[in-house]
Each structure stands twice: as C-alpha cells, then as structure tokens.
Length: 235
Length: 320
Ligand SMILES: Nc1ncnc2c1ncn2[C@@H]1O[C@H](COP(=O)(O)OP(=O)(O)OP(=O)(O)O)[C@@H](O)[C@H]1O
Ligand SMILES: [Mg+2]
Image (tube, rainbow over the protein chains, first blue to last red):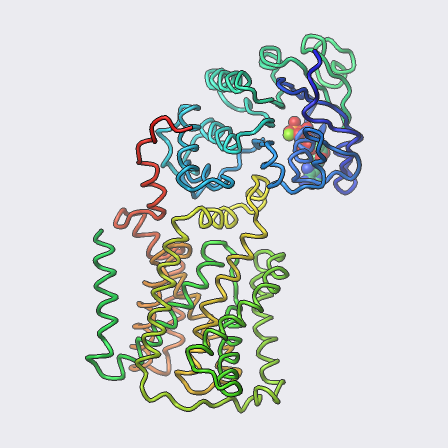
C-alpha cells in the first residue's frame, strides 16, 4: 500500500502506582486509514489514547505524529498539530450550551469564525437545533454527538474516538457510523476503540488488539477475530 | 436595549449625585463604588474561573500601601499614585498566581487567606517603611468629588470589562476551567495561562481601589489595609448577587451596602451578626445568587448574548 504511518507508538510504558497500564505498547496508524483498537476491560486502551493526546506522560517509549515527537508536548500543542479526541465518558461542560462547548475549545479563530464553524459541525451531526440547549440537559447519545462535533473544531488529521458506539441504540450507532465514514472519505484518519466486532468489521481496515498493556496482534479485522491470542484474551 | 437605557440612567444619576447632594450620600456611594470594584474583581477569579480566594485583600492592601508610599516619598499626585498601586498589585499577582494556582479548591482558598495574613504581618513588621501599627497618614482630602468620580469610572470599567468577558471566548474558557479543569486542559484549552491571566486581572481593581481607599481615609494601617471583614463582605456580595454573572456583583454590592448601612445605623450592636444571618439564609435558599434565580425564572436573559447573536446571523455566502 505504501501509505506512511501518521502515528507511531513505540514501546510506551505507563504505570499508575503499582498498576502497569501500558507495558511496552507499540503500534502504527496509517495515514488515511480507519484503525480499530480492541482489548478487554482494563487492558490500557484509554490510557494509550491519553498518552497520545498528551494528557498522560509515558514513563518510557516514544510517540510520534507526522514524524514529530508528541510525548513532550502539551495537550493544547497536540490539538494544534491536528490531533483531536473524544472521551469514553463524555466530558461536556454541562453549564454551557452546546454551541458554547464547541466555541470554548476553538483555537486561533475569531469568535465569529468559531461560531460559524461550530454551527457547520452541529449541522453535520444533525443537532444544530440543540445549539442553545444546556449540555447538562442532553441525552447520553446527544452528548456523544456533541463530543464528536467538538473534537472536529480542530479540523483534525487524526481523530481518536474512545468507544463512540458504547451505550447507545443501534440506530444512533448507524448514524455515527455514517458520519465517521464521511469524515474518512474527507481524509480524516480515524483511530477508534470499540468492543463491537460488527462495527469494527464494517469500518476498519486494520484492527489492533491490546492485552495487559501490550499490543498483541494487528491486521485486517477478520484475521484478528480468528487470531488465537486475541481469542484467548478477549472472547 | 432596555438594559442599556437603564444602565445609562444609572450612570447619569451617579454622575450628577455629588453636584446636588450632601456629603453623606457621596461618602456612602464612594464605599459602594469601592465594593463594586472589589466584587467584580473577585468575580473574575472566583466567580468565572472557580478559584475561590479568601485573600484578595492582599492586593487591596498592597495597592493602599503602594499608593500611600508613592504619595509620601515620591510626591506623586494621588491619581498617578493609585495607578502605581495597581501596577504594584499586578506585579505581585503575576508570580503569586503562577505559584498559588497550582493549588486547587480549599487549598487555594486557605492559601490565599494565609498570604493576606503574611502581607499584613509584613506591613506590621516593616516599620521603617510602613511605621507598623501606627499607620501612615496622608493630608486629608476635603473635596471628595474627584475621588468619587475616579472610583465611579473604575467601577463602571469593571462592569463593562465583565460584560466583555462574559461575551468572549476567554470568559467561556474560564467557565470551562471552573467546571472541569482537567477536561478543559485535555481539550487543548491553555488552562494555566488563562487562569494566571484571570488572577492578574482580578488584582488590578483591588490594587487601584486600595490606593483610593487610603486617599479617602487619609490614613492606612495594616488591619485596615488587609481587613478580613472587607474580604468577607466582598465575597458575600458576589455570592448574594450571583457568581460568574455580569450583574450579580452590582446587585449584591448595592443590596448589601444598603442593608449594612441600615443595620449599622439602627442596630450597631447586631449589624455584623444580622448580616451574617442574612447571607447564610440567602446562600442556603439560592446558592447561585439572585441573578441565577432571575435567569432561571426567565426575568432576565441568560448571559453570553453576543455569542447568541453571532449564532443567529445568517452564514456568510460562499466563504472559504
Ligand atoms: N488515572 C489513573 N490512575 C490510576 N490507575 C489508572 C488510571 N487510568 C487507568 N488506570 C488503570 O490502568 C489500567 C488500564 O486502564 P484503561 O482505562 O486504559 O483501560 P481500558 O482498556 O480503556 O478499559 P475499558 O475497556 O474498561 O475502558 C486499569 O487497571 C486502570 O485501573
Ligand atoms: Mg477505556
């Protein structure tokens, strides 16, 4: 294929006290791909995302994005480089409106431009009508949509999605799937954590499997599904 | 629109007041202006950013001493000296903010209270400069009108600044810090820089008005400069009016000033206690202040109107 890796994770170790959340995790995400990340609960998936996004500092190893080190930068610098993320447990500012949630994270643009961009994104995920609703009053599924729109405020090249399909009904899952496919066609690289094989089989070119803080397999989803190590760890 | 007309009328009334009335009302309004400045300043760091400070009198006292000393030693005109006091407060607030804002919640609040006590002790102890507990005396100001207008302009400035803040992304980002600082940081909001900026901004008003207060009293000593009562009254005003709102501090300062004045005149022996009871009742019954209640009931529009207006604007045609 010859596509170059956009993101490279090399031997990342992250300890929380005595817990080894990441134990030398290594992987690559190809530019323009949709890459999935699976693994049992507590295997270090969210921690890997936190390290990539600069929220946690790896104890060892390195992370590069477009050839530049990420593991020494602040989250804000990483956002400006074109890397955005959503949270597993939605993290909206509940006392602000939906629109304000998006505008608050905008970088650089004028307020007017930020508002316009926010509205376009809300339009894209079909919740423009909620723009003045307080985020704290939204349903769980609506919050997931706002999080995706907010992450797109940075016009990211790489979007990290931590379980975007968890806890919502299949109809909304399919809607989100549609948005993600559209983003992918628009050139955004997607790296997503999920437990649902149905969805991973549908959208991902590559799936990585992580167990006990180590990436134990990577390949096309059908292959990963049949990989004995993955089966042992996961299914 | 009505708000602007009402505001304009209020400003006009305040502007003619000293031309038509006795000195009692002028003195009262000077103190009201003073608390308006303090309340709005405290609102920036504690209301919007969520860092509750119990030690903002530090900046008030530093401004008071700074301005007084500049008048006594450098013979600066009072207005310039008060600006200098504000500058001094900012110069102290910047490094202090960088250090103190590492603390969160009650640690920050108590730390700030401790700092005010430290500054007070320094003012007592550094007698060569401050003459310790004896205090410093200034030539009395016979005409209070220049002071009245200077404080009035400062108070108005704080109201307008807060209105701007409330309608800007900076304000939203401060609110984001208040609500979920780690989340804001993870989303690329430059939390450290923003909260230090808010902290420094919140030191300007106390710094400048500290100087004005010294001019008003023509005297300053450590308990006056770093008074916990001033601090608590300021906090009560913002709590009463509504933290993190544009009009809350104004309403709080006005209502509690009148209330305190009435209590002080009629029941001097219970006035502090009665004030405390009223504050406790208000905080229990409407913990987010009167403005929040008014907004919830729909008597007042919610804040951040500019964003709403921007959002209502039709999209510019065919813009890249
Ligand atoms: N901030 C933290 N402090 C302490 N321990 C943590 C922290 N974050 C994660 N851990 C621990 O690290 C391990 C990996 O957690 P992580 O959240 O990355 O798992 P996960 O793969 O995302 O799991 P899930 O599928 O349940 O979301 C767990 O044992 C967890 O308890
Ligand atoms: Mg997780």
